[in-house]
Image (cartoon, rainbow, N blue to C red; front, side, top):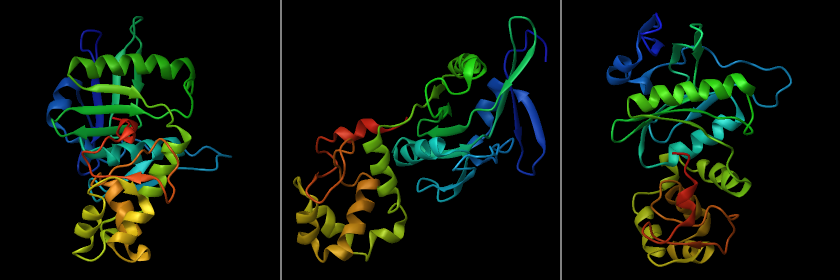
Length: 252
């Protein structure tokens, strides 16, 4: 690449062959949400949490995750109704700096939105994670995304309560937790007006059977509650159009 060529993308095609292409062209034609990681997530000795897989309720497939911080952001994006696709490290961006040196960066996360635009993101464990190189790459990748109408973000850690609530609800994201065919209708009807969690569950049937369906409905936004505060049996739960402070907790 020369200094006039701008940004380029490197990714793996469906048969695993590396492809290098002009970034603007790749963004228009490549389904990054369908691609495997262009390079493996690093394994850092001593870390309590290493690379793994996140099962996405949005796509029904696994997404590669490289850290606990990334896994938390995947949870938030997986619950975002605007998101239609997710992938871990599907593309490497190349560019030249002001001195003509080739630079590269692999954003940790890609999300596809319903309007066809994309989000490239990194998931630092704290604002200064990665040092100057990461912050410099963030400016370059943001410019590359801005050129094509996409977005780049460094997704900072969620608040403790929101992260804990998403983790809890994520345990019920699989369709099996919707229960028997007529249960979800009863659950939604029970919370047609805001009421306490346990009160509404008891109104819909046996709480042992009903509560998993309530949590499933909260994950999929068929019901709402304030996810910025700890979940408990007396928290108010209501219909989707009810005022939900937790809606602002999405990473998107």
